[in-house]
Amino acid sequence: MMNLVLFGIFVFLLVAIQFAGGQTIDEIIEKHIRAKGGLNKMEDIREMCMKGEMTFTGIAVRLQITKQRDELNPSGFNMQWQTANDEGLTWGNTLKGTMQIDNLMTEMQTTPDISQYLVNYAGKGYSVVLIGKEIVGDNSCYHVKLTTKDQQEIHYWINTSGFMLQQSCLIKEAVSSGDTGNYLTYHNYKPVDGIQIAHSIHVSKKGSNENSHCEIQLEKIVINQPFEPFIVKLPIQS
Image (cartoon, one colour):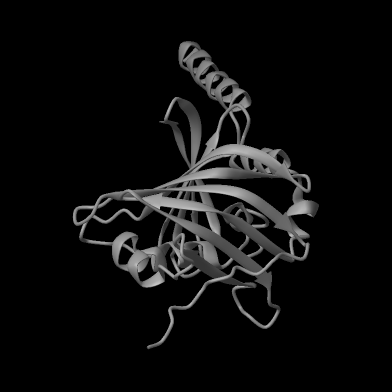
């Protein structure tokens, strides 16, 4: 009997030591938000404008994404996604048929930063679980799964050292075709008004029906400041 008691105490202590040396899901989220620049700065975003270039299948187009807070919009933000070639002509229809930019726009629509889903997740009625540790590129990451009230899944891979977001993937619903959605991998973080924002984003679509990717290089990002409108020259009507 004494041996069983001692064994039970040993197991309890072993589990306690493992938990003490690990990170809870709330600690990971708190450290991630702090690494981004802090909760106050993230929640103070009223509008954001990002300009740069997107490249896919050998085609490079100029890109501007603007997000403005709209209190009447349930999603919170209205977003415009505009692209143009060197002559200033819109490439919107071409992009939608190739990279399914409409799906990517939907993923980026509701918040100015996908990390904001994690902020006060319980108060929003979301649930979050820690899947475990995984390697993304050469980086060890915490794999976190967030599920919204409408059963939409957002997967996060947060770097275990710097606690910055390394990769994310949004899954709207269970897909039988094997389509796993768009994976966004983040690089080249730079501070913008005290908020760390990735200026290079690699987007890869993985699935049984399509495997494609594109690169987004952001050259200028402004937050809560006036920005120049994106000029798209319309073709001359004959």
